[in-house]
Length: 144
Image (tube, rainbow, N blue to C red; front, side, top):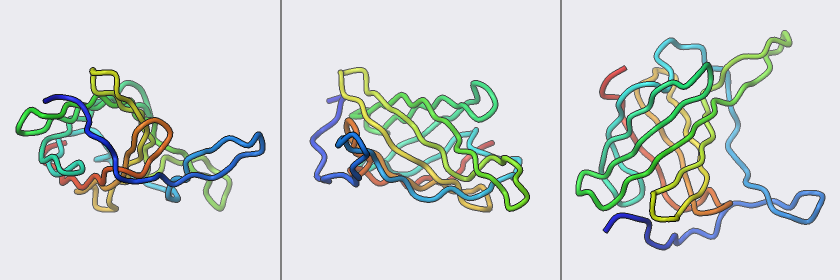
């Protein structure tokens, strides 16, 4: 069955000034390695073992597709690499990308991924709707 099953997590949220809620993401750190997010990654998204392919749309913007090995889940991602400001005031790319996802069956949500300093692993989390707490992402690079 393609699509998402229920998420057990309640989400990590904070209230904004208008009384709504906003996801709290982990801190982004400068990341200038050439490897970046583009490439093929294998690992787990929640309970699903599979492969994530990431391509570049423009500088700092990426598309991704996660496909579970057993065919039960396929996710399309639109990713934006976060920017950080150095101590000298320069704007730099970071090791974090925020993304939205959809599964083609009407389910959608948000998440984040952080690339390891060596560029060989991704970790993160995603959830349904505004939540980012639901499925853990743990992937290792296969190709650039």
